[in-house]
Amino acid sequence: MEKANLDWSNLDFSYRKTPYRYVANYKDGKWGKGEITTEDTIVMSECAGVLQYSQSIFEGLKAYTSKNGDIVTFRPDLNAERMIDSAKRLEIPAFPKEEFLKAVEETVKANAAYVPPYGTGASLYIRPFVFASGIVIGVKPSTEYQFRLFTTPVGPYFKGGAKPITICVSDFDRAAPNGTGQVKAGLNYAMSLHPYVTAHNNGFDENMFLDPATHTFVEETGGANFIFVTKDGKIVTPKSNSILPSITRRSIMYLAEHVLGMQVEERKVTLEEVKDFAECGLCGTAAVISPVGKIVDHGKEILIPAGMEKMGEVTQKLYDTLRGIQLGEIEGPDGWIHKIC
Image (cartoon, rainbow, N blue to C red):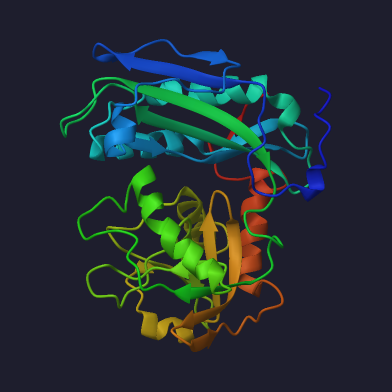
């Protein structure tokens, strides 16, 4: 198939409209039949539940052109399952897993010309989301919802790609104890916007959010999970009930232990011990793995020994293994790669 005329190797992480998207509606207690459409605008009541009480959830995954020319996605079944978990927490009717996977497949196929060619470093970002479309004025769940899925070709999430970034310890909380930090709800990201802008205005790439109860344990950034590497090569990731369960992090930890033979540990990580780690990275669908070179805690600089010039050796190995599987350069665990066409 002839590809769209884009400068694939120089794409940034921003929205570029593609021709087709997928839409399904929930009404009268059930999800209706979804379909591909070219309509990219949404018309709804000013009193829609999403506008009044922020009842919305979303997911994010990518499609790639593999080394052999196939268009593939990475573990989309886990995105479908996580969206179901998010829906339960916000009293949204779960969009069925099989319908989710169908929506991904049909929309990516329809927009195949916008899946970046192999070797460009770009990908087709896939954004499924559900929002309350029914009228709600009293505080209660809506009775009508819409599922939509669109795609957009993107480059690296952070400018400069895999160049180490600088982050700051935030004074703000991303989530509340026993709140919604563990689900992919739009309201969580709205709460992170002011801290994000504040960090950028102060010259930082991202925030390090601490646990909301004691402000002593590392949690995550506004849009990615942390991974740390000890001086003896062990992979450590923070554990908390208010951290989003990242599919990328889960995959990295599995590969580290079962493919690369490394020791892994998921546990509470104190801010105080961060200075003792040899490497630090942010991981997520958008970022994949972005190395962290420096963390600033209210003027106190924590320099990561791996340095500011490039990824640390262990982080690079994890990145290369994960990307190699996604691009068909390395054979991954059974079921991780879903072929679209």
